[in-house]
Amino acid sequence: MSYRKKKRAPANPRQTVLTGMNADLQGVEELLSTGELYSGQPYQRPVLDRAVDKLVREWDPRLLTPLVVSYRDGRYNLVDGQHRVCAMRKKNGGKDVTALCRVYHGLTYEQEAELYYMLDQTRGKLRLGHATKALVESGANAEIIDVKQRIEDAGFTWALDRPTGEPFEIAATRAVINAYRLLGGAAFSRMLGLIAGAWHGTPSSLKGSIFSGMALFVKTYETELVDQTFIKRLSAVDPDEIIRRGKVDFSTNKAALRFARVILSKYNGHQRGGRKLPYRFKG
Image 1: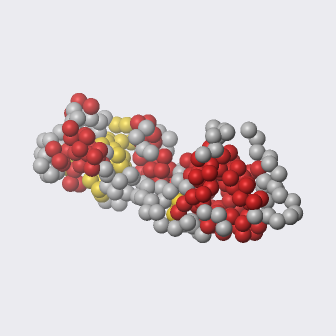
Image 2: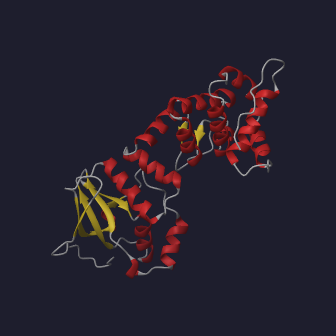
Image 3: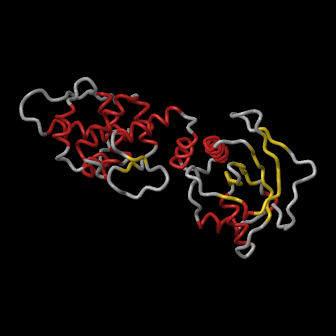
């Protein structure tokens, strides 16, 4: 990075081919004022003050790489380097500075999101929720897009980066993706319908532990489970009770199994007469 105020592209700019998308798209290194850069795209994680302060404390210009920028719709969109830009301004008394940028021309919004995801995956800095949000915005991963669509079709919102704790808002990421992969699309949608019908979007019913237990329960009893019976019986059960009981089951180290067992016991526990679901879990 440079703090020079004179804006001029290098005489022989180095070019970088953007692989994995369009091989004809190339990044060219340019000097740009940070005042020209726009950030805060939906695919980006929020800027954290503590991360900016850490960069300022540990500032070492020898370790800096060019900011990654996409020139789209007449402006320079900062794809990667939000925290660095904030740190550079803070070190310069809040004023804009000139920075070396690798600028891509011709990227779509979706390609920007995919590039953002790929860059942060190489560094391992993104938490899973933020990485998944970037994939959703990129439209590049059919599985993630299908998960999101099925969540919305069931009346939920997948809050991947800014959860508020409101009803019908799913903040879990890994447990949701694992449930989808275990069940497949149709059974995953069925599971979401059971959760919505029994607990009406209560935040505690949308925690990762509930999703992991429900996925195993639905997978195990897919052909025996009666949806209306489940909804009627489990609606009388507080999801927090399922979580509490699952956490104190030390007979297995498989978290999903612990919660699935509680769900099974609650499904069978309110049944008077008739056939109960037999224990079919493995392990």
